[in-house]
Length: 183
Image 1 (cartoon, rainbow, N blue to C red):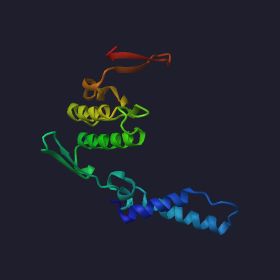
Image 2: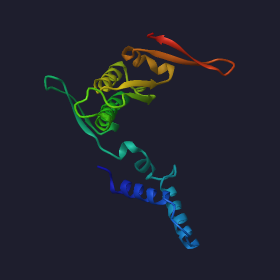
Image 3: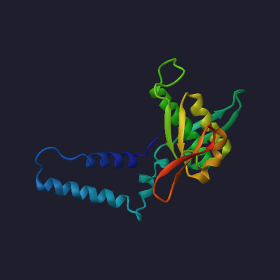
Image 4: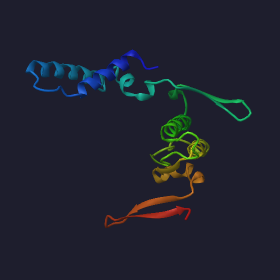
């Protein structure tokens, strides 16, 4: 559940992001400027509210239980901030994958209407076990993953990838792809 302070902050942000219609008197512009200044003061680096208002991990509380096929509880997720980077990324992968499948899937279809999913630096905080489970979930939902990650973070994903490519830029500024794994 999102806190009231975050809800009101986001509402004010949306209001101020919308330009007033038509000819607006100078006094109204001055009122909007003052409201914007107060809003910006709330998110300055020295503001005690900054983390609560800006860090989206604190905006929503997610609770989930991981249960194996035998019905045994494997783990409990109660708020993302309490888990390791890999555990958090795994949970988010399952949630986002399921939400996308729901939005893009046709009832009863084996694959979603649009299967390729491009993920930038996905699973880079996860070890091979968490990355494998997350990739397996996306594949099980019918998606084809295309993951961009720095070369030093590829090791966790490599065992779960059919193809691993590296982008190389030569001295002349031309880029090319080199196959590291696969055909």
